[in-house]
Image 1 (cartoon, rainbow over the protein chains, first blue to last red):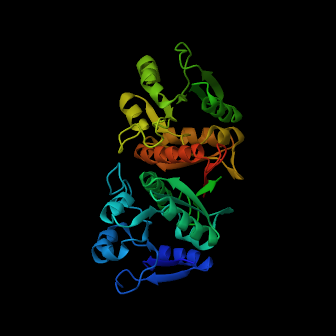
Image 2 (cartoon, each protein chain N blue to C red):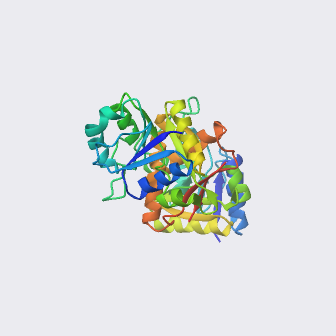
Image 3 (cartoon, rainbow over the protein chains, first blue to last red):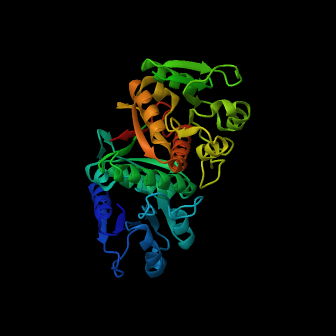
Amino acid sequence: MAHISIIGTGNMGQAIAAVAGRGGHTVSLVGKDDTDARLGDVVVLAVPYPSLSDLVATRGADLAGRIVVDITNPLDFQTFDSLTVAADGSAAAELAAALPQSRVLKAFNTNFAGTLATGKVGDLTTTVLIAGDDADAKSTLADIVAAGGLKAIDAGSLRRARELEAIGFLQITLAANEKISWTGGFGVIA
Amino acid sequence: MAHISIIGTGNMGQAIAAVAGRGGHTVSLVGKDDTDARLGDVVVLAVPYPSLSDLVATRGADLAGRIVVDITNPLDFQTFDSLTVAADGSAAAELAAALPQSRVLKAFNTNFAGTLATGKVGDLTTTVLIAGDDADAKSTLADIVAAGGLKAIDAGSLRRARELEAIGFLQITLAANEKISWTGGFGVIA
């Protein structure tokens, strides 16, 4: 069993902690300012994009050697009309550059919290798309997701985080414009 | 009833023609080199991205005043690792710039041909995501799609074509890597 730490106790943090817990793993849900908590082998940064740089500054050394999961959608929430990262890059790529000793994955950003909590998007089992450059790290996270009753798909290298963030962005704009609900969105049919 | 022309007689062109025909519209399926065919009010360019510039050169004047639908996924099919348009742009934005007198929409690029033909992704009704800057044009296309038995969602301005092309790109890489089938992919749950 892995020890999984979730930094960030909002809706997404709570939902991801519940998924990890269903698989019988040790889960710690850690406030983002609680820098004393001992971190697990897998650390999910369940914080908004603007908080990532603070986490890197305060906990970067402690994240070395661990699997670090970025779930952020780096939107301009003023305009809902663009991302706030380089057009050819991603929040995950920035994080990987800032944490060269961690194995950074992108995951969960295409899942609304409600669909993680229930395990369903409509009648479909919720699918977590995972991008990253370390196959073992991706496999570890995929096993945690599957043990929690969801589906996981390896979406490719960390370069694919650009596309995952585009999907997260579009999905949020669709919900904000009431084209879909916050319990709906993109389901994946294999 | 609208007159809809589909330029391009491949799998996507045939599938889109069938959708349009189910709604009782007049549909003409036109070979991409048939420059004599009279075009309809709505023209779907069902050709690969590299063919768009030729179409603009040979038929640009004839496309003026019409609703022009770009369905392309401008992938680097050698590497499957990037798009071939500017990272902050899209094929649709390029087309709109080249056809300033047409009302350019992005649509169908997130739908595999098989899901247009059957109207289903798994058990879900296939949803066509439409981006564009002209509300009337989007509404016209959405009505055609709905009359053909599919769902349509207004995905926002033509700027959102960047995200639609990212979704199309990722979906193709997932199918090419056998993570999903060519009859599966992203379904939209409202």
